[in-house]
Amino acid sequence: MPRNRLVRRRRSNTLSSMHRYGMMPIPYPTQHERPWTMNDGEEVLIRPIRPSDEPLMISFHKSLSDESVYLRYFHFVSLIQRIAHERLEKICDVDYEHEMALVAERKEFQIVAVGRLAKLAVGNGAEIAIIVTDDFQGRGLGTELVRRLVEIARLEKYAHVAADIMTENTAMQRVFQSLGFELEHAPHGDVTATLTLASMTP
Image 1 (cartoon, rainbow, N blue to C red):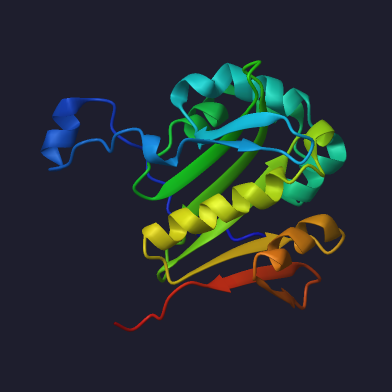
Image 2 (image 1 turned 30 degrees about the horizontal axis):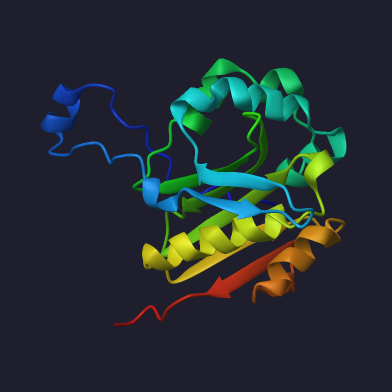
């Protein structure tokens, strides 16, 4: 089963609330916005997700097959559920202090892949999750998204990152293994991919 104990904190939408809690919003992290060329030669822009991406995310979810949805969420989630405004609003409005979401965008303003790095509530670790639209699978996008999220995790000084993968999702298992993750088959049948980034002690 996927990890559910993630830190998910919504950012305040008012400056007064931010001042009340003694914090200011973290600016959009442009340093993580870089182009990348897929295996077939097409260039995409890999960048952090933005609140304005909600319409693009609706189109992205419409492009996913039932199999891709099942392998990502470990159960079937209907399109109506996935594109609900309340859900997409939370997904697109990221609290960059505790989470990072990267999208791969074509020049035609089409999102074709999404990767997420979320801080675990316990310990100094984070979880990675990736989904690539069916027509763009096998072009190296998943591998590049994981590589970028690991890079961000190192910058954030996480001690380790992990991902839960379904046993039948052998393609994603190969992606993580190629980047140095260790795979462990859990008793319930799923696979946990883990990469140690730093020691827990100074």
